[in-house]
Image (cartoon, rainbow, N blue to C red):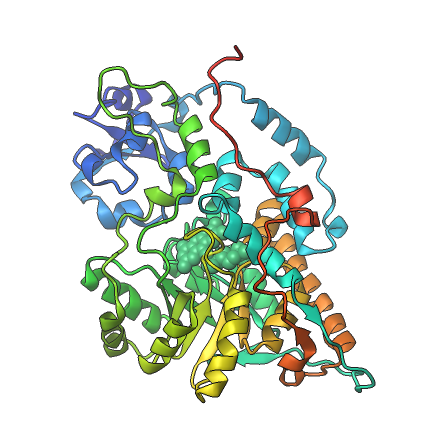
Length: 496
Ligand SMILES: Cc1cc2nc3c(=O)[nH]c(=O)nc-3n(C[C@H](O)[C@H](O)[C@H](O)COP(=O)(O)O)c2cc1C
């Protein structure tokens, strides 16, 4: 490593697969040998060969990545950033329109519910970020049903119950929470906000709710833990690495740093095809011309695929005792999708399951968490297993009435993903703070109106679930009309 400042011209010479340097945060790195190993493929690095890659690097990689994974000898030195000129990007009409929307954003007080954040975020988020956050798998039927399944459940409210005082607090996996939802794990927080997941940590602290830290966070794990306040509770979401020593290291580090539960994601042995994400990345990558020399074109698979190649598809039930042997944290399977597997999870001795389809991002036409819950609890009760395991659900929860329905049906709590990402992307910490407060306000009102002063008073006689399993793909509710993006078709190179 040189001690003198490198210039842009010196770095620009290393602009090929045989010598590839990139600048990240004012430092030059020689990534030539790393090109074939990059989980996101070499093409995306080569696009920035000899240039400043910071903007592309930041949302996808925690800040300690280069120190951890690139040998010191490849850290080439500091760069005189005054010699680096910012490239003029072609004017993108979407970007011009987005800047206009940002200038004219509704003030935060105009957001009255979680769907409002989604509608604003759609307009003000960067195209790639919106595509990654909002996309679901295939035809997005599960994505839409996650939300609409709640609308097929109706309340059966009790009257003349003393509801002067409402207590919505609860415990989940032994930890107190002011309200029965938690911030579920969602990767790549910095795509939406430059500070990333720590924004969610701060909002969760303010509202005494639990945060699940994603394996694939944009911030480093330690940054997210360092941002917690006092006895704030955090859980870890785990994608199991093919290299079990790496997995063990992650899990034990999380336990040492105070995480109270380990949520092993079991619905993603391969990542789903999220076509909006793939299409945006493809269009942005500048590879929209068909290859003519017979060589296969790297049709970039979007942000999701770029970061997930390490996940072990051989993970199976026999691995569960190993997790028990390496940690004392509570063990939860995230992404269970049928009652038979909930029973197996009980037998395997795990502490909980999340009935979830990964926010509609994995197997399309997999059922929603709330539908699985409605089918599962009666069977668990029949078998005397309902008290043996804590059941959580996530997917499509946008109103406190959705939370109430899940609790009536026996869930201990619910996870909420996209709404907090959208609130964060559009309005930062004040946005997430308001989103959480709105849920609390709605929750208080709903508990009062249904006749349940505490969460223990919510039971299955208070909901009518007869229609929950009747699927429809109707898309005529507010969310669908205001924020849902229909899937696009391929773009012609010119208007013929
Ligand atoms: C942008 C995004 C990233 C996600 N990343 C992860 C992840 O890294 N690990 C995981 O287990 N689940 C992940 N999920 C799934 C969520 O934990 C959760 O199951 C889902 O978001 C719930 O649906 P909702 O977004 O409708 O609330 C992600 C979801 C989204 C929307």
